[in-house]
Image (cartoon, rainbow, N blue to C red; front, side, top):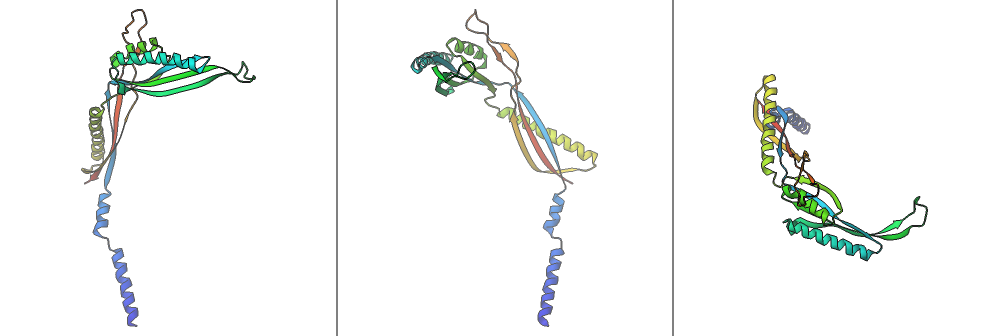
Length: 240
């Protein structure tokens, strides 16, 4: 009989402990009074460097002849790049290939016939002086480059612009939060959390004419524009 009384008492105590709200639980309920707002900030920065992929494709009846022609053109191209004050560390081979060229006939019905070889040699070039990009492209084509796959622009040191975008994003989020708080007749408390995501959009292109070394050739148009550096933040405030 005494054993049964002890067991019932233990169950009753455990039930009361479980039902009693703890200080931690009450604090957690208080902490749930939050407002989370996102903010956006962006800054436009002028790109100060360009990355170009250029090279030479040479064709001949034999692989040896195609390679010799390609090597001659690439040697001249590399010389012009260095003459334009492009550092060795900013020039890197990105592709080299030797491929047979086959003739499949007009309708593709005949047995493939070997008619020659194509040799491709390409380099990736980083240009830190965009003002001379037009002249550089002109020299590259003149020296034998017949393959330019694309040009991309970027900001070499975006930290300052990124920090300014962060300030604008926080200001935007704070402005929104204050409007909501005023409309709901509540007060903002301490900031509980901040998270961010950032990115850099492609430059907004504006074409201009670059002066070239040769007076009798048309100047090469280059793209000069601005790049959008943006930051998005999400801020949570405690509500008083």
